[in-house]
Image (cartoon, rainbow, N blue to C red):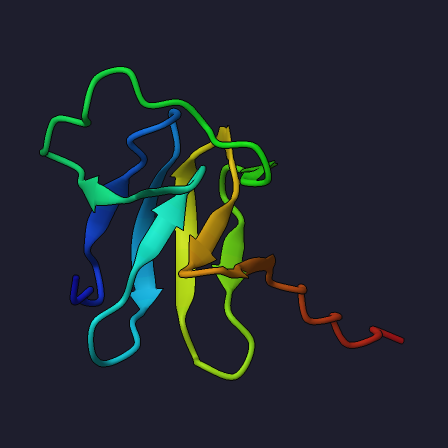
Length: 102
């Protein structure tokens, strides 16, 4: 699927929902819990569960990235599945330190 900035997606395996902040060009296989993400308005396939090895969960209000790609997403609703592009897991984006105020 091609993802665009501002796209809202949901997991088919758990309660995770997200917004794409910075997309990457081309076809992308964004998964959560081992299953492809779908549009927020689409109905998930019934009976899908988070796969073994695709656990770890997401945190609401946190941004996730994939190193070296520029992809950035914002989780709007937390879940139990891990986010990935293909077999490469997304990682929690580190917060930039604030400057010291002397």
